[in-house]
Image (cartoon, rainbow, N blue to C red; front, side, top):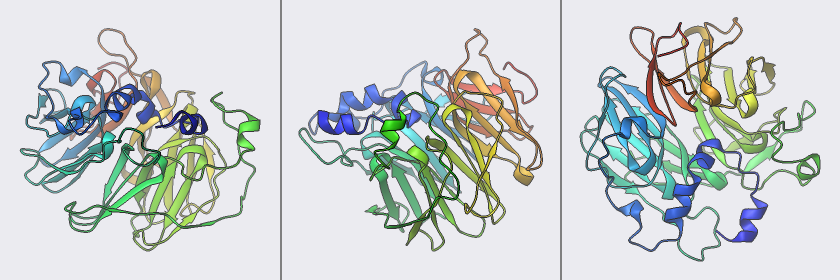
Length: 366
C-alpha cells in the first residue's frame, strides 16, 4: 500500500491485524508466486506458535494462526497440525457449522473443509498486487460468521465485507450503505495514546476496519470495528444502520444472547453492553486496562473475555460483575490471548501468541 495511504490509516488499532502485520507486509508485495499460494509447512512447535482463533465442534477443537497453521485437538490439551493446508498466509478466524469448517485471514484468503477438518480447499485469495492503490485489495479478513452451512459473511480491514449464499463456492463483495444515527451520548476519547483530540476532530473513517460480527437470536446482525464503529442489520445483511456508540476506540469482539442483548469489548479493557439491540449502551467495569481480544458467551448472559497480559475476565450471568484473573504459562509468561473456547468439564481452552493453553477456570495457572 502507498505511504500516503498508510499515513492516513495510522489509526490501525485492529490488534489481531497489527500483531501479524509483519507477515502481511512480507507477502503483500510479492508476485503471483506469493507464499500465500504455497501450502503451509509442517512445524513441530506449531501448537506453541501464534494462534489467533479457535472453534469447538462435535469433533473437538480447531485453532488457526500464523503461516497457515491449522491445528486439531480432541481434548484442548494435545494438538496435531493439519497437513495439506493450501496457504502460508496468517489465518485470523475460523467458523464451524456441523462438519463444515471455514478459515480466513491475510491476503483475503478463505479456506473450507466439508469433512470436519480432514481436507481443506481454497475458496478465495486476493494477494495485493505491487503498486495497487486500492486499500481493500489484499486486505486481511478478520472475522467469519455463518448463519447456516450456506449463508455466511467474511469481514475485515478497510470495511471489507464478503457474502456467500452457497457455502463459499462464491464470495460476493458487499458495500455497506448506512443511515447514520445521531449520537445519544458524548463520545469517550480514546485512552490508547494512538490518536489525539485533534485527530478525532478529523471525523470518522470512511472505511473503518470491521473487526467482529455476531447474530442475535432474532436474526439481527451486528458488526463492530475501529473508532467506535457499530453497524446493525435487521434483514440478514441486505441493509445496515450505523449505530451511535459512546466510545471512539476500537472494539475487537462482540457477542449476543437472547433477542436484544449485545456485549462488545476491546481497547484498554473497555466493555459495553446493550439490552435493546444496540439502541443504547452501558459501560461495564472490567477491572483491567488490558485490551480484550476474544471471548465466548455462556448461559444467561455469562461470558469469558480474554486479552493482553494474560488477562481472563469472567461473569456467571448478565446480573454479575466481571472478575479478572491473570493466567501465566508454566514458564511464568503472561500471554496475549486472542480467543477462547470451553470444554465439557468447564475448563477453558485459550489461544494466543504462545499457542494453546488448557486452563482450569478457577485457577490462575494452567
